[in-house]
Image (cartoon, rainbow, N blue to C red; front, side):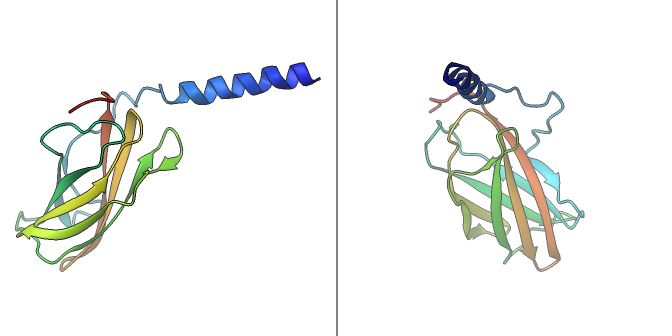
Length: 145
């Protein structure tokens, strides 16, 4: 019986280890500019100039505009996300820390702990109302610099 349980445990460990190798969906939307879910805002996510390495802290920028394209000042954000194929969230608690210029905000404290498909979710609370948007990114190179 113990031998049978050990074999089963080994299979579970192998399955969990290979789960990180899952390919993202073929039709995954990787656009970094889109309308929010209810169309209240136009949102662009600007990645760092150099692709971050796995387990490296990095910052992004969020550009927020009205549906008509006018920069939105004074918005507040909640940041969430994770790896849908793994069922876990982000390894850090990133947040929008400041408005850098009209409609451009600093998103700091990002880190990806492994390669694969990540979601970055923004809940937006601005003068035009509340809305949300989700961006997808795929981390391929664990040592990008």
